[in-house]
Image (cartoon, rainbow, N blue to C red; front, side, top):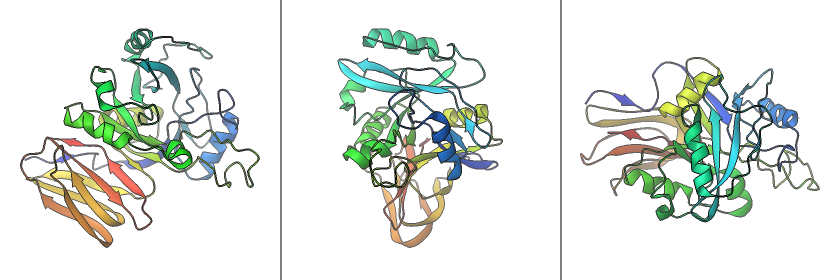
Length: 304
């Protein structure tokens, strides 16, 4: 088998948050305060995705990805989609707002956007979705599998399972993770970023690019050249000559997963590498890393 990698060998890794809110919807910090906060903590790119509002931003240190969080429906269940602009062209004027009242209305708008925007389903577990709810959905590029706000504040998890159900059904959905930061609890000591309820700087996306630009970042996301992390780093992940190769930051567990119970795991202290043969029945493989603090990193799949 020729080498298949989840990211190019050449390039640089960039760190970003692609789901966050400001005072322009239901966040408690201004856009400038949010962007400055992420810049001060070493992020490379950010998308402010206020609810149902088209807006673009600039920052001297950060690459800003134009995007918005669209409120809609899957069946009768309210859901949220993130749409990120792929290039320079926007379908909508600055300040455009949306008020959708049905799934049909949402799907019509999403299909108009498909060529120019990446379309990801946000926090499906928080939206009370089950795998059957997604059986007719054919417009998604991917799914938010880690959402720091819903998991940290509300202990709502399960989106990874819904993503896996899609992968097993041959939906080649890609993954992203984010903070979904609102920066609430303004009366809490050390607000906005030092309080116990802080929902910033938790889950993020790492993308591998040749240059730091909005177009390069969205292209890398679209190609799956990315992984979701809460702290650990995946340096390499590829398949070659029927062998899976993983190299990562120190971990207590490295696990390869496919669409069945075809797991291969390595458990120990300070693990930085796993090399294992394919079992021969995989449609895809992906990797999860867990470090000594219990923080995870999850790769996009390599489809075989």
